[in-house]
View 1 (cartoon, one colour):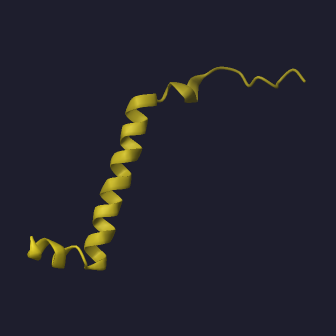
View 2 (cartoon, rainbow, N blue to C red):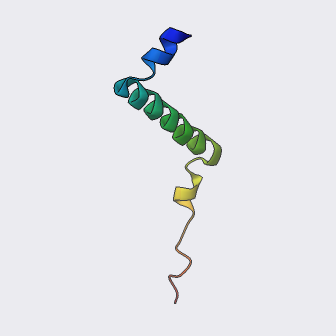
View 3 (tube, one colour):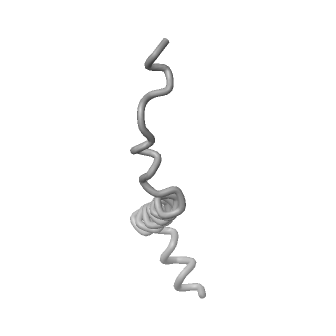
Length: 48
């Protein structure tokens, strides 16, 4: 456990871990909501 605590203090390791974490969140949101919102049809305010 001590080795892990020393290893996580390196800035490069922190950057890699955070990048993987936020990428996983982004992919999870894409999987939950999908790409269907991009093809929702016409813009609602076109006729104004």
